[in-house]
Length: 626
Image (tube, rainbow, N blue to C red):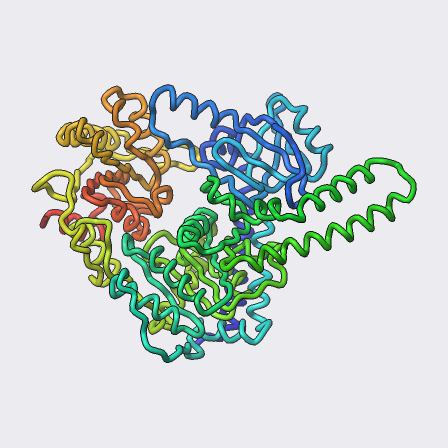
């Protein structure tokens, strides 16, 4: 059995490979990739305009940035009554950005970098080093902003791995050894609690969380009520503990679980701004609560006085500024302590657990949601603050994104949740009843990914759009794929047109009036971004979809993670003589795509090409038996 310390050291080497690969990718994007392509990939806004600037509650100088292109795109979509799927964007809270200006044929990058403190739609707020920098960007006519290489996240993950390897703190060393399987995990002995509103597997999962002294894993396949179970487990844990830490890889996942906890009446303190922006979400952010504290007006006045003194040439201003800063720090510490003392749940991303606001905070229990999408080094950032760890997710759905193939082959893509499932199987509880799909849609996924252990609740077992129809259909497309773009993005226009023809016919079969009155929603999924762009473009252009466009969503597999629709159409794109299927061989993505459907699943693909894969061969055979 490998030494846990050596394993962590090897993990650090793999993370460094990924760091170098991502750093190089950003360099190439900056030097070689066109602005238009960067924009389509969601890493660039151009052109942008500069809005108002001000000091936020954390005393950071920030400026509003508006994406003129996305704003115009939204106006055009509204005018056409088109689908609401805009180009994806990767801009979110905490990510670094860099401004640039177009000067003739050249792109000039500004020497300073900024950090996003808020992002929503076509507007974001970024912290900026100085007012001189604001003047610099405001004077540019052709201004843009792009994501900058995120050194901070990597430095934080590397630091966490160093702490784990060195066994910094006895508890951290214990957890490291348990997760490697070198030490047994421990459980409390007490009678199980009854939760009549949960199904038996959900009830067992909550009890296992309450019994766990070290670690527990809630394995939640699609539609099994993982969030419901996790919220119940957190709620019950808070009957025994004063405060818990709740984390996830993405801001969106943190927002989702936080909102459910707020609905249960749990006081939540959200570190980092939410992506699902509404008044309820904003009201429990650290910044909003900080501004609402009764001592904040005094702090704001002191900060204003400091800025005025710094800009003036008054005598003894340095001594005055020093005294005011000391007073401001006292108030800041008091407000922060009050906010943490009031909260029962502190919620943030895994990387956000290293935020300076969190300095000195320790928690008896850490809950990590969507743990199967998080790199193991990111999980250790938060684990350093906790006594025990509860992971929830599904390692048979979307994995973490790895840019470096060598790091992937070395094992960086293997998540902490997967490792614990292997080394400590007794601490894993599978949620076994799903409430989303008809039985026929669920069954293939259950057999291939979950050892046939899933079953459908009676309420969904026979659900369908039309009576006596096959819930899953395979439509064979025989025209060859094409590749376009700088990175050979895959597209199959003939297959896309075939899909749209079938969709049009199926809507007509349902009846447009019933389709509209029942709000039957459709998701169109393709693993290839270029294919989704083409399909979306065609839906927006074709008159036959005009009345139903608002009920049709088009996106990649990643874009549909965590969502569901009544009807799902999947375009697999790949069609060639050599049986090459590219990243369709990542079967977890296909599991996600198929399990978005509640009542009807239609898959478009070249059976001859895809049958080279045992998975797709078996899937086609299964569909033929229905």
